[in-house]
Amino acid sequence: MSYAPIAFFVYNRPWHTQQTVTALLANPEAAKTPLYIFSDAAKTENEVPAVAQVRTFLREITDFQSVTIIEREENLGLARSIIDGVTFVCDKHEQVIVLEDDLVTSPYFLKYMNDGLEKYKDEQQVISIHGYVYPIEETLPETFFLKGADCWGWATWQRGWQLFEANGQKLLDELEQRKLTYQFDFDGSYPYTKMLKNQIAGKNNSWAIRWYASAFLHNKLTLYPGRSLVHNIGMDGSGAHCAATDDFHSTLASQPIVIGNNEIAEKQSDRLAIVNFHKRTHPTLLARAIRKARLILGGAAKAYVLKQQYAPDFFGLWLNPFYHSRAGLRATIQETAGQLNGRLLDIGCGRKPYRELFATREYVGLEIDSPENRANKQADFFYDGTTFPFPDDSFDSALCNQVLEHVFTPAQFLSEIHRVLKPNGLLLLTVPFVWDEHEQPWDYARYSSFGLKSLLENNSFEVIDHHKINADVRVLFQLLNAYLFKVLWTKSKVLNLMICIIIMSPSNILGAVLHKLLPANADLYLDQAVLVRKL
Image (cartoon, rainbow, N blue to C red; front, side, top):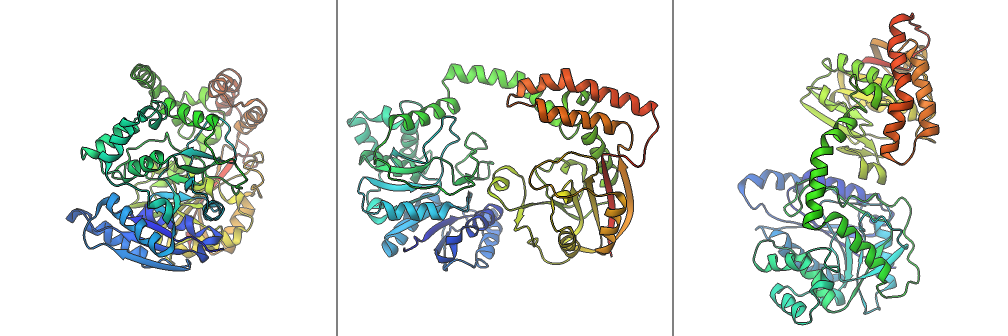
């Protein structure tokens, strides 16, 4: 099997580019795949440093079959760059996989793309293979066809790309002449025709709308996966053509997509699923007005409830089933945060719930590499579960909050933290002591205060401060709520809120009252926090 080359288009986003390349390298097929990188030149003087930073990173890329970097000497813009680059690679290899610098892929992306290219290479009706699919509520088949073409992680053959028509006016004239604009707009659910008109008027420079229209007018089909193999991390407002939104957030497929013997035709049920998605995310003017009113009225309340999960105040007694644990952890971290300075590494950062407590020069989040973490966590870097992607002595301080219990080889893990910390660097580490099994099956250990101190000292850390959190009757009430959470929690956010307010809050309140009246017990506690120094 001949592996299709990748045409990768980058500009001025170093972090996004790095995430895209790192995800691609997690595909086993990367080592057999030629990579062509098209780096556009800076449009303004202000963008020169970011473009230079991207190009520095590009020159360090290895582990593909080959890496060819085309550094543009003048700014082409995304449309010209892609049209020129795809044409170049197709002329050379007769097929191409196309990615932009903000598309994080599943480890099964390249297998799916190559399988699709191989299976349908002689099917004239099929113009392209696509890796992304919208977060559809309806159940989709493993793969399916839609009329047209798409732009978030796609592949085609030279025969398909030869149908691309760059003249937007010509495409619009034919759509209107054949009275196809309603169908082109997915039965009026999305304004693709307006997008094409804006391209013609110079209000956007979209190559993608012309690619879609070209395929649509030739009655060609694109293969889609039923589970997305692409996650767009550029919907954060950093891109030139994408506003910040999470409407298109799809969880990456954690298993390979199997391409079966589908009928090569667009099925009405699959098309309807896309239409329904567009109607939900692009409602009518009246529906938008109602939705906006609900957001204004309910947005503040929703944000407040979410804040209560990691920063609970008095009302968290009614809103957070883990009130005592989360309140105790936050208070302890806040007390210690002032001692951590410089460049800080948050190991197992999740969504960085404690970022605001630190006044460090730089706050870097690290997570273990997985499709789920890439899609759902706010990490700046990912690692393979063994080696952190940083040189020795990179950080002044580190935070590791409720992570160590999920590490099967704690000595090796602590040695990595020790390696990346500068001499005398500080680490704030928290771990649970009395808690149920969670995040199964990756819950491996509980540490007593003596065991934790010994583990840290054996790995060349000096214990500066050791604090037991909630070492009193609150342990009992928190465990009761942990039990109720496991047996009563539902998929309904509204019902869960009612359960918390009516059933769990009495336990939170009793714990808050009784711990003032009853003596502490230093031998029974929820969590512990340890501040240590690298020796």
